[in-house]
Length: 398
Ligand code: 1AE
Image 1: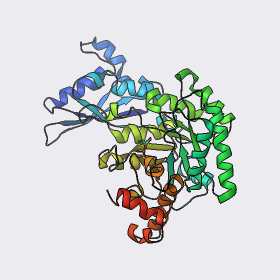
Image 2: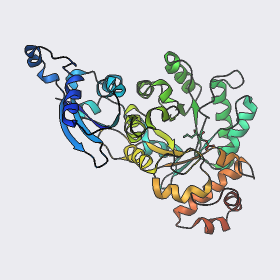
Image 3: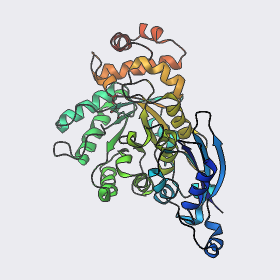
Image 4: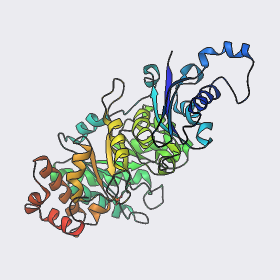
């Protein structure tokens, strides 16, 4: 029989065994009050079981509980409600991990394209990809957006994403935005021979999201950006499973901070942003890097990366995308920490280059290629004026 095994950090290791048993029974067949013995016997296959209990040196405790899949349907709303629904409100407790048995894992789509599929689309192998972000486009028209798209592509970036705060609007409606961006990318391709992917932000009410995404794909969108935590993991899964939405999906971490930031409460970042996003179908997983403007602790970011790219029988690997406040001086550190199968993502670090957006992209391209050749940033900068300028402005290293 299948099961989900949940590991929790509890704030106080006193009476740990009693607490663990209370959770295992309370979230499955029991209640805070005793049920009749005869009913309990009928419900044996539904009973949760305590797998391990550990008292930690800091006075906290770690407990692992298995929940039989006979209790829920094979979807994340049911699994999350079972393992950390009411329990998330019950004092100092944090959900550290969820382990799904194979029969349950198989019910989830995982990334439809993944690292290898995206590399094929872009024709870029053996190096981290470079992504840039539209900036300053709220209140701007399609002409401005088309120009900014072309500049990003000419700078050599592999993927361009919408800013997550660009919603449906009269000046640059989604369908028109896709069309002008495709035009800009075609022009850039004719000049450079390089392909660039554009991820358009699908937004609006939850019940309209699938239609909105289908409209984007009909208009020629080649990737989607999705603010998954404002909607829910199950909505991401619905997008990934839709036969008409046959493009990679980029999961943005907006709002995730409300769930992951506390050391005592909520959900561990690697579980939410790494394991669950990949399970639900994200091809790209964005998260704050450990050293940019919005920094996350390094252990968590490495945990997200590991869950995104670990080999798995059922699911393709997702691209980890450490982001926020990234500039070219961070490229060696990013590659050291996140590896070749990652994406270097910058908004301000590209558009804020003193030479403009094209030069901003070129500075990153020089840094990535140079690091892959084994050169130091200083050596690379001798052959790249754009990189030298970026390092003068933002420095090198963390
Ligand atoms: C964690 C996501 C980062 C993001 O979406 C974004 O817009 C970053 O912008 P910059 O690179 O910090 O300017």
